[in-house]
Length: 294
Image (tube, rainbow, N blue to C red; front, side):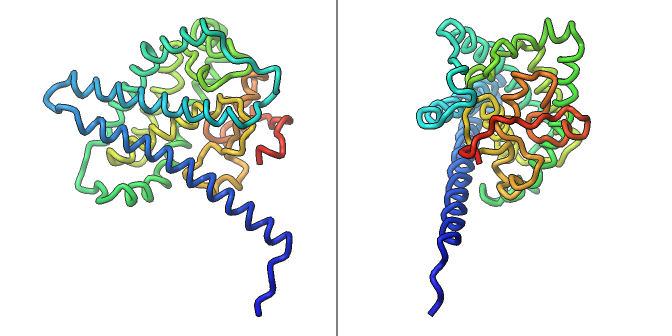
């Protein structure tokens, strides 16, 4: 007869099952968003540029607001970092951010998606199933994210150290000392181009090619991680959820890492990994990470 597991073994099994459940739910949610944007894109009349752009615009809206709604739900039962110090934006601020999302953020995301489509035309190498595309997407996305993060780090750092750029381009994003999911998009158009569109374009140029399905997965994960990093929630998620094993390394970021950037703006410029901050000496580990966040 096999011996029964010890209490410690049971505890480890429960921890592992909870971790698996967490990543299955997260990745299923993000994949569902990507599938929805793929379906929307397929409804476009390819002979009409207006139809194509309108459905790309709608796809970005679906992507952003699905993730915002997700973190709104998560916030109903998770604690926030810094507790009572963290206050939600006022109704006037919310209206301003919503206007920016529709008028600035979504159009720049459409530009990023269009560049990605142009640089990654469909080919005979496209995959026969969503699952196969996803399996190959994981290592490709790791390379793309590392490249993206390098150029994002560089642009973000420059926006902080050049006074005129900070004042006229990036300062708006730091109006919120303790960001929230919605304040992710408290940004100006030039800021978005410098820190998102250009790094994404360079990642597509220098990184591995992706299929149309994989492109939408890249964009869905990007949106999720962007909003997660500004959520202010005391959660255990990592910045590269599609590869849970990577979370055991020291290069993945948590919500706490980017939250610290908003209170200590000379540190933690990267968004995906701590790799570039550690390499260039700008990484600062947060001291407010609770046990629940692990």
